[in-house]
Image 1 (cartoon, rainbow, N blue to C red):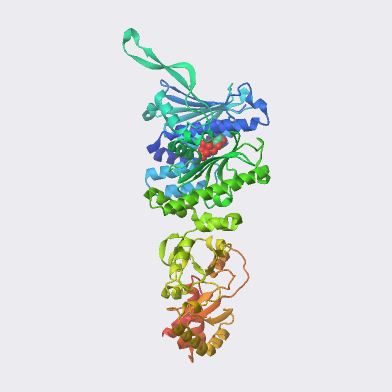
Image 2 (image 1 turned 180 degrees about the vertical axis):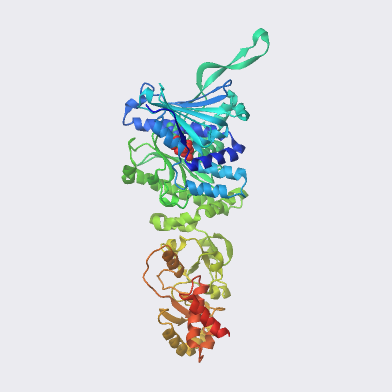
Length: 640
Ligand SMILES: Nc1ncnc2c1ncn2[C@@H]1O[C@H](COP(=O)(O)OP(=O)(O)OP(=O)(O)O)[C@@H](O)[C@H]1O
C-alpha cells in the first residue's frame, strides 16, 4: 500500500491558484456553487456509468449532496455519493488542469497588468476555476474520496494549502463518493451559518436536479431562560427545489433563475443576450434550453473545441459538449437538450449517425436563428429599450465572424444567415450595414452589391479599387475578417442581386457613367493602345494582362485577381500559412489619365517606370515587391 506522498502542482495550477486567491475576492460565495456543481457532476457520472454496471450503486442508489459545517473546527464540508476518485484520479484531476490553452490563457492574464483584480476575476471565472475556488475561502482543503466500485481500503485523502504542493495518502472510507472539507480562513467564518449557506444555495444551485441536504436547525432555549440559539439537529432536510430547471414549465421559471442557470453551465459572469426554452413534440420529442452568450469565450477560434450544449436523456445527464447537437458555426451557443427518444447508453459515435439527433440539430439551429432574428428585429424597434436595441450589435461584434462560417457550412439556412450579416462599408465605420440596408441604398443603374476584402479597415478604405465608387457615391462593403473571402464564395447573390468583389475581374463602369464620361474613357483607351502593348511586353513575366480601367481616379494603377479567382490578399494569407498555391499572375489595370501613366509614352525610362507602376500597385494593395531592392534602385534612379 502506498504511503503519504507530497507532490507538486502542475505549474499552471500553482499560477491559477495564485490568481484565484488574489482576484476572486469580490465574489467569494461562488465557491459553493462550484463545489456543489462538481458534486452534482460526480453524481451524474455515476448514474451514467451505472447504466452499464448497476453494482456501482452499492446499497445507496439515492444520489445526493450534503452540505454541513462545524463551527468549532471552522470547517465546511460538501459531500456527494457520486463517482468518487481513486488515488491516481485525485492526483491527476486535482493537481493538473487538462484544458487546452491553459498556459496561453494564464500568461495572457498575468501579463495584463492593466486589468483590475475584478476584471481578472471575471476572466478566471469564465475560464472555470471549479474546485480551486475553494481556496478563496479556505487556507487548507482536505478531500476524502473513494471511487465507486473500489474497496473501502482504496480510499484517498488529498490535502493542500493551495500554494505549491499537495499531499495524498490512502485511507479507508466506507461510503463511495467525495467529501471536500474546507478549513475556512478567519475572515470566511460567516459561512458557518445555515441561513447564509441556504441563501447561497437558493441563489446558485436551486435548479440542480439532485437534492442538496442540510441539517435541520432547531431553537434551543438557554439555561434558566437566559436567551437561546439555533442548534443543529441530526435530521437532514432538502434545501433546494431539486428539479431540473429545463423540465419546469416556462411560467414557473423567473428571469433570474434562467440567468443563474446560464451562469452555472457556462461559467460566465455576465447574463446571456437571449435564451429560448421549448418543449418540442412531434417526430422527435425533446426539451431545449439554449442561450446566446453576451461575449465570446477565450477559445472561440478553436474549431476543434466541442460545443456548449449538454445532452440529457429523460433528465439523465449523458454528456457535456455534445457537438453533434449544434453545427460548428453555432459553437458559442450554450444550453441543455433533453431528449425523450434517445437510448440512455448513446455514445458520441452513435450520436453522429442518429436520425433523432439530426432532427434535434435542425430544430435547435432554427431556434438559434430565430433568436438572432428577433435580436436583429429589436435593433430597429423604436419601442424597444436602449438595452434591447443594442443587443444585436453586441452579438455581431462578438460572434459575427463565426456566424459567417455558416454560409459555407449550412446551405439549408444560407438565406436566413445572409439576412443576419452585418458589414462596415465606405459609408459606415461600424459593422452595422445589412445586405438589405445596402440594397435599399443602391444607386440607379447599379447592378451588384460591391465589396472589398483587406487585412484592415484602413487598407480596405484606402484601396485604389474604391476610387471610382467614391466619386460616384456608390457604397462598398469593407470586409476585414479572415473568414470573409471564404464565406463570400458561398454567397454569390443576395435577394437576386449579385455580390461582386471590386478587386476581382474586369470592372465595367459604363453603367455608372454619363455619355461624355463614356466617350472620354473610350478615346483615352484607344489612344493608349500602343503604350498598353509595350507595357504588356515589359511586364510579361509579372502580369497576366495589362488593361485600361475606368475604376481608378487618383491612383495610376492597381492589381486585380481573375474573376472567380482568389483575391491577392487571400493568396498571400494562404502562402504565409505555408500552403502551396499554383503560380497565378495578377492583372495590372492602369489609369490612362494619371500623369505617371501619361509619362510612359516615349519615356527613355519606360521599362523602369513600368516595373515601378507594378510594384506600387502591389504595395498599395498590401503586398511587397518581389525584389524590394530592385524596386528601391529603380525609384532612386528616377529621383536623382
Ligand atoms: N466531487 C467530486 N467528485 C469526483 N470528482 C471530482 C469532484 N470534484 C472534482 N472532481 C474531479 O476534479 C476535476 C477538476 O475539477 P474542477 O472543478 O477543477 O474542473 P472541472 O469541473 O473539470 O471543470 P469546470 O469546473 O471548469 O467545469 C473534475 O473534472 C473531476 O474529475
